[in-house]
Length: 120
Length: 89
Length: 164
Figure 1 (cartoon, rainbow over the protein chains, first blue to last red):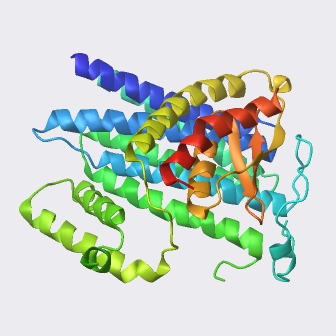
Figure 2 (cartoon, chains in turn cyan, red, purple):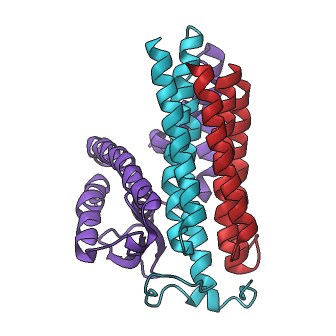
């Protein structure tokens, strides 16, 4: 019974953070700010649900079910990479930003590539 | 308790994914759509894990793992395309 | 000598072994053997694709850093949740340049990932000479404090772990 309450708690926390991350993505005003919602809240959201799943399936059978860790591990490694690549693409396209524009950043290698012209 | 919590959580995830979809459709720029898609697949993983708990079936988990990998590759490919105009260098 | 010949990357091999066991979700003897074979062969076959990287010198410091980061991720989420749900006008987004003392690619990658996962910051880019990271903060009120915080909290332990 206690375990069920703990599982429910983790499910609610996970879903709430996933929802908050998505709300951030939907309502923040510029691209770089929107990036903050998904990279953090969503990873913790999935983290909460995965912990709940781990508790649930370890409880159901005799042995423990550890392969839930894989998804969390994978997301924690990949989320910053996706975020960094997306923001690099945004810098490359010179998206409008509410923050003061950054000084010159890596542009040489892109400038050398004629195919990398602006999209959108 | 669980059969009360899971439908609530499913509803929250549905709203979250609807918001992601709105961002994908709305834009206004391509990187916005990309992170919209990125968040959409992360939320899909969460939804599948949740569904697995609801159905007491661990098989959904394998699907979540596959989506995690495919989604990441997709996001990287799209960003690469925007950065270089080409996916494979 | 034999160690480096057949086990070029012991940590990677250990990781692969554990990952295989997690993936199949069982510790049956057959899977132990199969996992061991994969853990031995995969690093050998992929050796040429791996950039050389500094070895972990202080595993305990690395573990402590992991603990700090996990705690920060949870706290970061509460902060970001409040900022996201609160009024947008109160946020002060800024690009911040964080000068780097780390020199090697691999620790820099880890640092950038940690920054992306923790409070209100996303690492956007690294300068071509690898001397500084460009970080975007969701709400930055005190730029020098943020930079000092990142350097003291995450970069100093990383320097210690990799001794570079």
